[in-house]
Image (cartoon, rainbow, N blue to C red):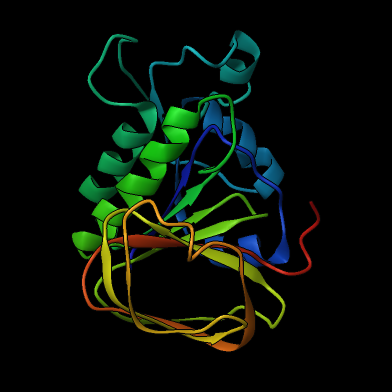
Length: 213
């Protein structure tokens, strides 16, 4: 599977788990996301965006990276453009690095919804800051490799039907969750975590153990 990492403008903390997720990935930087490249030991093959969030020093520091420049007044975010470029280059799996935090809450929300849309298109997608990880959850079953004690929440992006959660401190069995409900927030892994969903859209947000606050 052709793995791409998209470097976004949010927060990043390098961890062994993040390094493992990025192993072998081709890399595209979206505007200010380029600042994560050196920290993560990555060499982008493309730097894309309107470049309104980077300075001349950053541009001079990456002279050999192909650049694709767009006007500031455009209909897509730099992150969307980077994702589209990855798909054009054959991405079958995408890691959105720096998907959380940063100065723009609207961009963070868009990353969450974009990830769900990518998975609906058959593209495996992980959102990560190193400190937090997000996994889109769609109808069907999924398992997660988190250690006991890991905190996690399920964020509903619609009404959820037939939700089952096993391996958690507060398991659920074929429950209905209304959009906007807080019932699926702040759970804890106890054993092998699995989630199955009858219908709806959600995102599992986890804080892996061993990563400092």
